[in-house]
Length: 359
Ligand code: GLA
Image (tube, rainbow, N blue to C red; front, side, top):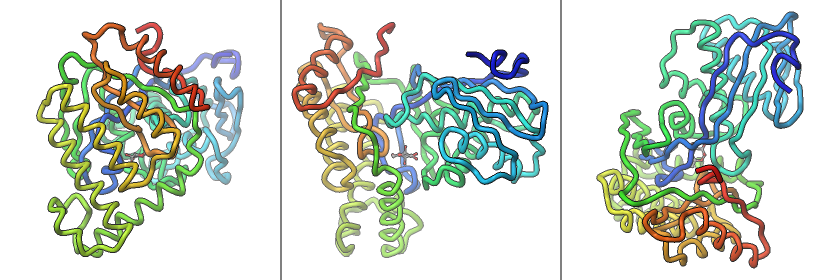
C-alpha cells in the first residue's frame, strides 16, 4: 500500500528521520547531563497531503492501521498519538494546521530502544515544516518532538532521542550537552564498528520505571540543593543521600564522566571499557537492566572481537550495543551470528539490528 492507494491522491510532501542508538550517556539527559548517540540507517518516512474533510487520517503501513480524528478528539494510544501530538504542539504555538492525510512507513524497530517514536515525531514535524512552510530549525523540531512525546505519549523523556534524530548522522557520534544543547560531532574510535542486537525482550515496565527513575533523580537533586544532578561532580557530595537515591545519583555522576572522557577521543579499547562500566552502573546503581539483557551483554563482553557492550536506551528490555573490532576477522556480521547462537542457549531469541545485512 502507498499514499496514493490509501488516499486516492498523491502526497504533497515527504520527509524522513532516523532512529538512534546511544553509545554512552544513559539516563543522563533528564539530569541536564551529557550523551553520545548516533543516528542509524533505519528511519521513518512520513507522507502528507490535505484531508478532503474535517478529520485527520493517519495510516501506518507497518501496522496496516488507520486512525481518523479531528484535532479536538481525545487522543488515542499508539502511533496516531505521536502524530496528533506533533499537530497539537504546533497548534499550541499558534499555528493553524489543516486536516491532514498522513501515511507513515518505518524501518526502525519498535520497542527495541532505538527511538522509533522520536523518528516518527521528527519525520512528522519535518513534513509539516515543509508542507506549511514553517520557520523552524532542527533544534526547534527536536524540542517540539520532545513536547509531543511528553504531553501525548506519557513518557517524561529527556531531549536526547529527538536531538539525535533531528541532528545526528550515521557517520559520527553526536556529543550533546543536554542543558545548553551545545553539541559536537565526534568520530567513532579508530578501527571500531557498532553492533546492535535486540534482546527480544519487550520493554514492558519501561514507561513506569522510567518516570520513577526520573522522579528519584529530581528528589536527589532537591535534597542536594542543586538544579539537576549534572551540577554534582563530586561523589563525596552524595554520601548524605538515602538509598536508592544515592545509587541513582552515583550512576548519573559516573555516567557523565564516562561521556566526557569518551568525547575527548579515546582508543576503541578504552571506549569499550567505558561501555562495560556504563552497563554495570545501569545494572547495579540505576537498576534498569534485567536478566536477559545482562546475559546478552555478558556474551558480547566475553567475545574476543568486542571492545565493550551495554544495554542501550531506557532499559527494562530492548537492545544492546557493542563496539567491535573491524580489523578482526570474523567481521561484525559473523560475530553477531555467533553471539546470537550463544544467546539462544539462554532461552531467548535475539535479532541483529546493526549492521543490517546489506552493510
Ligand atoms: C529514553 C528517553 C531518553 C533518555 C533515554 C535513557 O530513550 O526518551 O530521553 O532518557 O531513555 O538514556
